[in-house]
Length: 101
Image 1 (cartoon, rainbow, N blue to C red):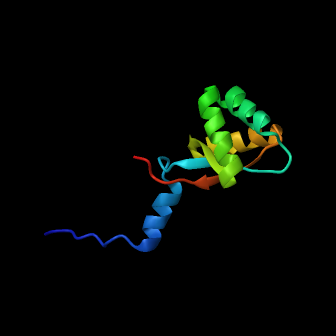
Image 2 (image 1 turned 120 degrees about the vertical axis):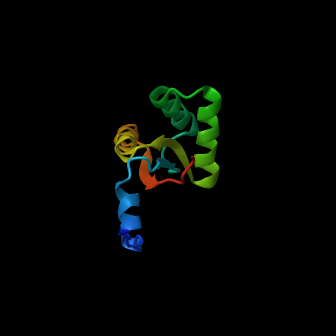
């Protein structure tokens, strides 16, 4: 006797996506009218340990595009980064990222 399983429903797929630990999340830093570009670059270097070149590239993306995904990882880690960015006076949020796998 064979046992058949029901196909996954859309709700099951969405639920699995919401609780899956391997879904990447992004820390988004937004452009603001307050912070100097040099300060934003400094924060990226001092907090994330990014090279001067990488920090400058991300800072220019924030400045020209209006936002930049500056870090990727678990939701909890990105939320901790948001708190840190707010502590530095930067505008930051977390969003579900694209699968980079």
